[in-house]
Length: 111
Image (tube, rainbow, N blue to C red):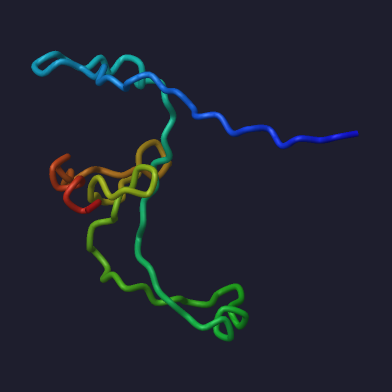
């Protein structure tokens, strides 16, 4: 049986064209309005050695990097979007937004 190596062929591709939105045309946000996102609030953070972590038990107090009364950070999918304060509504916790980060500022922080 005489096996011959197949000759490599050159791939051919069509020219790519920009099919994006023309300038000045509105973007239809309706297609993403039902996409779920994760909203989370952060009271504060700290770093501790694993030794100290393993010594925590019921009643332990962990000091955070934020002073009492400072606003909470509000994140959407891990991106800071606002600051707020804790409120109680119908015996459930909520958050009142006190400062919303502008879209331009959010984009600046990503870079």
